[in-house]
Image (cartoon, rainbow, N blue to C red; front, side):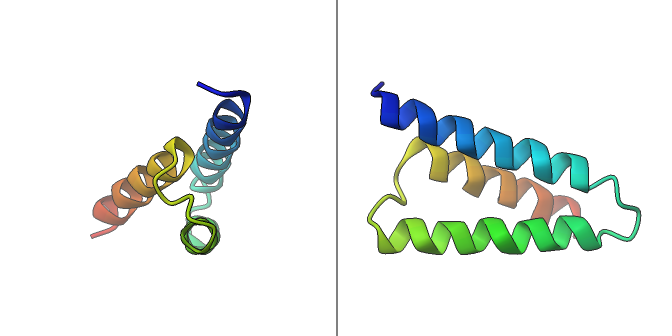
Length: 71
């Protein structure tokens, strides 16, 4: 793994941890907002042809998990 890939993974994990902590908000508003921001980040990754990066895969999996839990 290159240093850039490691940095991408670290940023993605930080976002996931932040989103997890925000989910403690009983109304769920914080989690919805974080989900929106993460989806926007994935859109940017697609525009930069980085949507197949490890970081994007981590964020995508996290979004799938929180979306399936809210159903």
